[in-house]
Picture 1 (cartoon, helix red, strand yellow):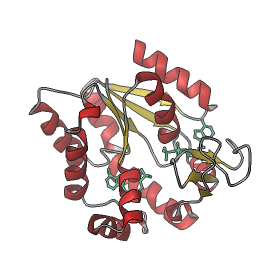
Picture 2 (cartoon, helix red, strand yellow; picture 1 turned 180 degrees about the vertical axis):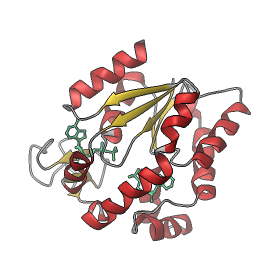
Picture 3 (cartoon, rainbow, N blue to C red; picture 1 turned 30 degrees about the horizontal axis):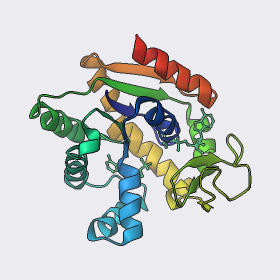
Length: 214
Ligand code: ADP
Ligand code: AMP
């Protein structure tokens, strides 16, 4: 099963991908996580990506597409994957389609997460992420058992720089301008599944599972 998770920052893509990867036994490929790891490792690509991420802007298409193409060629992607946060522009979607077509493959479903803007703001500004395993928490909606500590691995939790209000506002604007056109793009291909993401995590999860079955 090859899936794309499409939706604004804070819609719950990462949270749902974490649950679904375990169920379907396919990897989650988050371009945001790949960039954050590259920043942490101090690679040339990380340094370049950081300039855009800090401002809430998109990393240039050619950089992102190259990284995803390399990642999809790895053996653990053979049975499918969840693309979380990619594609984010029509150019990225076209490049993905061409890359898959060259291997006789295609995307099965695109899950479109719909969440009101005020909820997105509350989710992003209260998000805490594990430095070690990447698990996601929320200070109000999904608090860890012990403040500042990951339930899974006891790693330290931190708040992303780009979850500060200024960068969040920019990221939501960038989503509307550059990523939202992908809703119509995949609707036309007949593979869009729209999910109401403004519900408890388990209810969203069930809606996705039921949608994938039908
Ligand atoms: P995305 O990957 O789409 O940017 P996340 O999965 O990281 O979004 O979720 C953003 C924040 O909202 C996190 O703090 C997460 O714990 C919280 N969250 C995710 N899904 C829900 C939900 N259904 N209800 C309440 N809070 C949620
Ligand atoms: P995310 O973790 O998905 O919220 O992504 C964090 C940041 O990484 C974004 O604000 C962008 O700067 C960058 N990024 C992640 N995925 C992409 C992508 N597909 N295209 C361009 N930039 C991306």
